[in-house]
Image 1 (cartoon, one colour):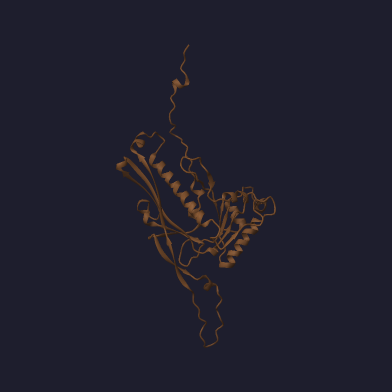
Image 2: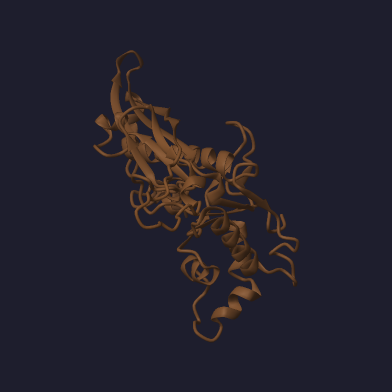
Length: 319
């Protein structure tokens, strides 16, 4: 006797309360957090730099009665920045918009997609140029890698870096940036765990790691990138590789405020993105294409201000 089947009584439809998109959370990216942000009104300009050596030289002398005090001075020069504009767009055709089923939201989906792309671009730019050797005052690879089963001393190695920067600049490093590969090793390292085994049952967090290593903050690079061309098999890797950067960064940009680096962000794009931001997202009509265009723009210049305020650990853990 014929009976209706499941496919006869139910037609598959798109769920409206869930969908899947592989977007990385903002906390995975650190490029915008390492260096203090300097909003600038022009894409390029100059700024003053004082000669460090003059400020740390001991020139105060005893003054005999009725004589002049010893005289001194300091050097002053200028440096420049140039905030380049990065941009990307995605078009939404009228036919796609008219036929999109819930929960699709073409404008919102495109905005989230483009924002993700800009975060990846910014992270890669920072990592390529500043999370690398031959950039900072000291490059170091521990004699015994931190991932070794025994014999490694990450706490002592970081303290040696702190002492090096302090001795060369008078500033104690306050920031340690590391890839997730490094973080995953350190949070399980016997030296680190030993400091907390009697006081805390919590897993080792960035905050706890900062306390034991003697810095104000630990930033973990957890962003990934796909280096394959569109259409090719994906090739994923962590943007931070397996390195770490110890540095002093000013709490805020300011007059006579040294820092390992600054992020000069051009505010000229803010008309369509909100005052005070350096990223603009625009939506405008492309009549010839019968489509709406969603476009993102951002302008920045990560710039080393004092290489001596940085100490770079190159591959302190095994691959």
